[in-house]
Structures are given as structure tokens and as C-alpha cells.
Length: 342
Image (tube, rainbow, N blue to C red; front, side, top):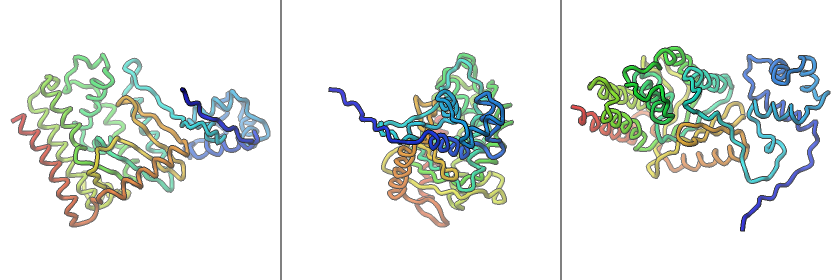
């Protein structure tokens, strides 16, 4: 027998729904953009007509509401308080056809800068692999992670016979990395890691070495050296409790909290809080990222993080023996991998 969810449609005034929609759009819209101009462009109406809709003097049509909810990724179900037992997620599916790496980085930068502009903000992350931002200060390692992703996960045909040393990702990374790091450094972060968080990158490097994807025998060792440098950089950030750039203490950024959970590996769950607007990012088929602002899912994810944090060990603070032991074990894993290529 199939179970059908009961949907309760509450009584809600159309003008109140319209007001709530524009209130949510205001929260999402970057501060440098005009709400009226964005609405005018999206709905293909005059600025005066857009203002009338924003003020509630003219009702939105169903088609207009659909256009706005899709563009700004706002769940009308959530606004209506419809109890459907479901959450609405949005995603731009990454496929080899039409994939543009520069556009991808541009979208990542837009999201990051939007969070950075918030007054009160926080990123919560449970790592299966390290957060992508951790790789950015290490150029070759960062390029390798994206190269592996495009070549093997997305299976882009243009990279099918391309060795790592002949990749064409450098120009886009050189353009966007400084901007991404600048924004990310200003966002407080709470990360949960496990002892296997380094394993994914080690396996990827080893796999490509065996497959002959590296033209030069020293490439694998150079990548492992940068991975070791990244692990040490993460240790320093945990010790200081702030984000740092590799250049030194003068680059201290936002607060950084790191926790160790030995019970199980993370699943790359991400929760972002930006001035009360919560966003959950969910991995789909490894390389696609879906997001939702659904209040119930966001609250459930927040509860999950709080539950895990209570059962995790803090790696912050000076003279923390748990931190030193954890990072020593990570470095030993990297060293063991290096011995394979001697």
C-alpha cells in the first residue's frame, strides 16, 4: 500500500504572500543591487510597475510569482506553510556539455561574496574531503583537485586524453583565487573533520600516478608536498582559532573552529547562516550541489550540527594534545603515500 502525504492548505492572504516573497528576495539580493531594477528586468515591466508590485499596490500573477521564486530559489511551499513532508531543493546540474570552468568559479565567487557581505554569518561544514577553499592557497594542488573533478567525475571529453601538466585551468584560477580567498577569509567557519579527511586526495593522486595521467614522475610528489603544506596550514589555523593565509599571522581573518569527530566520516554537509537566511547545500551524484532555504530542513541540519559538535573534540587553542596527535596522523598518511613514489 502506498502512503500519500496529507497536504494542509492554510488560509493566507495573497497580499501577505506577496509581501513575504519580496521580504525574502531583499534578504537574498546583494546589497549593491536595486530590488526594483531586478524585478523590472526579470518580469519585463517598467520600474514604476515593479515598485507598485513591491509596495503591494499591484498583485503578482501566478506566472510572475513562479518566475521570481525560480530565479531567487525561494520555496513557495515554505511560505505557504504547506505540510507536504518535502523540501524544495535547487541545483545547476553540471554536465560535460556546455561546462565552463570560468563561469563555475564566477558563480562560486558570487555566492561567497554574498555571504561575506552579511553582518552576522557562519559556515558549518562536516568534511568527508577538505572544503574546496582550503586548497586555494596551494596552486598546483588546487588545480589538481579541479582537474580530477572535471576529467574523472564530470567525464569531460576535452580532458579524456589530457595529462595533468597540460591542463588549461590556470588562467581562471589565477583570476578568481585571490577574490575567493579574500571573501572566504572574512566568513567565520566551524568545521568538523575525521581521520580519513585526507584519504580522498591521497587516493586521487595515487590513482592518476598509476594510470599515467602525470607526464612527469615528480608531479605526484610535488602534489603530496603541497598536501602536507595544506595540512600544516590547517593545523596553524586551528591553533590560532582564526583563518590565515600562508604568508603569515598578519593575514589573520575571521574566527575558525575545528572539531574532530572519530565516530564516522563526514558527508560534506554544509550549512550557511547569513543575517538569518539559512542555506543548506547537499551533494548529489558527487559533483552536483543542491541548495535549499527550506526552514524545516535548515533547522534540522542546524540541530544535526549541534548534536555532532557536542560529541566532537575541539582542536582549537594552544597546547592542545588532541590537535597535535590528529595532525601528526594526517602527516603520517601523506608520508606513507610519498614512499610509494620514491
